[in-house]
Image (cartoon, rainbow, N blue to C red; front, side, top):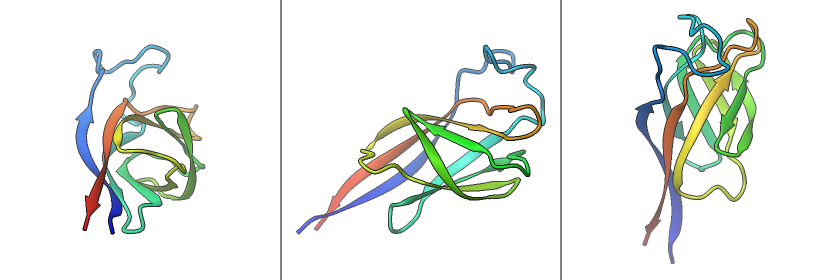
Length: 117
């Protein structure tokens, strides 16, 4: 019998263009920043660590999915992984609710599906 487990690893941020991404604004130092991601032991929740996530409910976009945020603080977001997500690399962004819907630089995370006997 095989069990599937999801693991995430930090690949880092990319697509930096002088600190500004098209449609993003001024690249303020107070824009949300993703530092790391991890998956819980039941493989249902994704924890995002960083800074400047804001006090209002943020949005999290991973690949083609908008994740449902369960809890959040200024430095951590816990969101539900979508059903049917497979092992792959995903582009992720956090959009803060305030101020002015600032978004993080794109962050790339990889979910691994591993078979364990």
